[in-house]
Image (cartoon, rainbow, N blue to C red; front, side, top):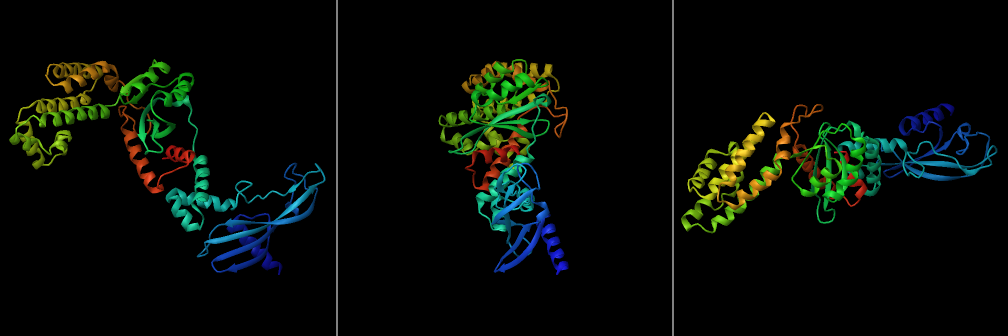
Length: 410
């Protein structure tokens, strides 16, 4: 009998982490197993003062979900919880339950940690279905997992940042994402976009971010003005991805505007060629290159704009800040000398932000996976794709805190 009890105690210890408990009974009902356990007498102590000079005054049962085993997905520990009277501090309360991850939990500590492992590789829905739990319960477990994983960054260790906005739908709207370019990790997620979204973070950076060198961003006036107000000595780098995107938007607008002025014959040449005008030539097939040549042979303002677009892309191949500045100045002159309104507009924009554009040539990331790369918001574009994938897998997240934790742990 003692050997059977020893074996049963060993099983509940190794399977469920119930080290200080005695096995009492086993009940099997359909696909559910229930183990009855109670605290060993010598381990009961006062939760308030840790004294073992206590008297038990009855008990109550508490049912806890335990680790799924074999084909049994619902396993419970029916724990006998003693009510105690401490002779040392005169406290009257129930004993603590050391196998819980936190006092009000309805599952064991081992169960929680196994769920952490499952959630590393699976969605909340998958884990909920596997463990036979409701989605909200598993979500709360995942929130605790993400909080444990989250590491606090030190402002003084930040050197290069990228910031951008991401649109998460009608309800969640915009979030401002700030990325540490050395680690590739999101370090801050704020509601909204623009100055109000980044001001609190920038205020702290002003005091503690003594080693910050540069921030990559788009040409949003709000982000720019906030940086200039709170971090006036930090280099701002206007990302080439957004500049090329702006150029493409101007070309597309020009294409629509000019197409309406052409005769029917020339309209057929341009119609449906939008993607060719915006596509990088090195990615085109021979057929696409031939179709593009037909468009460019028209020798229209659209042709001039396309050539300027490709010449602008060459800017980021410059090796030094000096050559970059000279090339940008000459490009601006060529754009201004055209009679194309859209090219004059972008020339005016780049004239205003010349320093931010050419700051690109001053900085290279010194450590991490991107060591040696120049600064851009490119890594954030990859993060944006991860965000979209994450939202599809989770079918959207209504819990704002959970959403931010998921973003910070991408």
